[in-house]
Image (tube, rainbow, N blue to C red; front, side):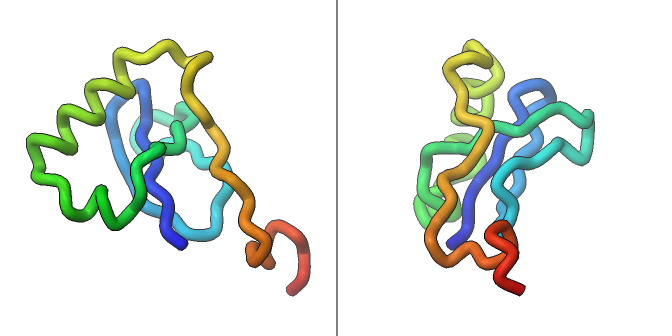
Length: 81
């Protein structure tokens, strides 16, 4: 399962599969877990992505989720291997 993270400080976005929380590679701030599904993100046009990123930049940080939900199959975080 892929997840989309957006940095509310600088607007950098990235997709990850195993990490539950993430720091921005550009500015070092905590990245917010985007509520949009990865497949929907891929289908967005560049203008729509930029609009969504601006929404996250303008949002109040206390309203953003900085952790993704932990699925039952996330072996790395549960130290199965």
